[in-house]
Amino acid sequence: MKHARVLAALCLVVTIGACRGREAVLEQQASTATAQPAPSVPQHFQIGRVATAEEVRAWNIDVNSSGDGLPAGHGTYAAGATVFARQCAVCHGTQGEGLGTFPRLIGGPKNAFNFASDPTIPKTIGNYWPYATTVYDYIHRAMPLSAPGSLTTDQVYSVVAFLLAENGIIDKTTVVDAHMLPRIQMPARTHFVTDDRKGGPVFR
Image (cartoon, rainbow, N blue to C red; front, side, top):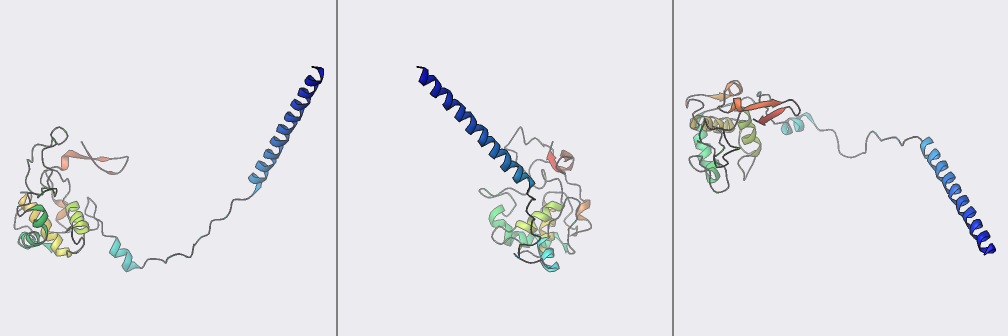
């Protein structure tokens, strides 16, 4: 028994010593790592090149709610009706009523902004979109679905004129351009407020 106790005590002393030695090594390693300067980040990775001004212009095509980014050009209802029939009606219907999963663009109740309580109410340009400028932006960037970005500036302005007129927001004789589009008061404008946290419109 006496020898066993002595052996156990010796084992304990050895174990404690090993642990303390290990701690000392870890402390030394941590001190050495801390003392090492952070590796410098290379200023250039030798990948790619600086975009040209022309390339930036081709990419920078977004239009915000104030109309910033709208290009020179104009459109009319008559020209827009022709473009819509050729490029848009296959998905959205000849009257903008929407086909299958493709959304309705024209019509819908203008005085019943109650989409949260009644999801069956169709969201159209006439009763839901708060800014006419973003109608241009979306069509320009994403439509037609089969060839987005293929419409000319005047064609996009014309489709916007057609859709706004069909929704009763502007007269069919109105010429749409970068000057007048931001001035259009959309029926749903007052139902959107600026979100100071994100800087964009939110549902109210």
